[in-house]
Length: 223
Image (cartoon, rainbow, N blue to C red; front, side, top):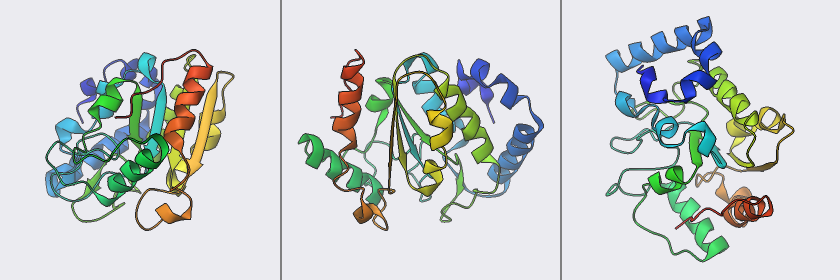
């Protein structure tokens, strides 16, 4: 792992990064990259961190693990590079955005513009083997992302958390453990397997922007 890609997050996560659990995780992840096809590419592993430093975080969207097909994952939860066919989960996210805000669905699945506005696009597990969804769930990533969410909870600015799916929802108590303004939205994962259980119609985008404006922050441009 290239921890320099974490940027300012290295100071926020110093104790975690120096701990034995993270050292074991790093060794296991490096070994996986050496022996199998793992996504996202190693140089993209911490893209979410490099694009959205702590002081700029206003929204956290938390998913499960990266896309596991070639050419999709690039270090931002739910995002794909320009020109890549939209995965079904992102298709559903765009459908809900259109229903909520009237923004027409796009064939561009790159969410970098969201990240640059302060939307921290994080998965609970940051790596996956090709073709094997959730294959790295036992690597120890959850302890690392618990520490990330705990650091987010300590930020003084208003932050909205969107926890999609059972794994993400386990972070709710950590996210809510703060005296600072927080919005915690929990719902089914946008995957076609679960989106009809309450993801559709949940209107997260307008709720987030209402929360931000209520606390004197500019809304996110979700287009």
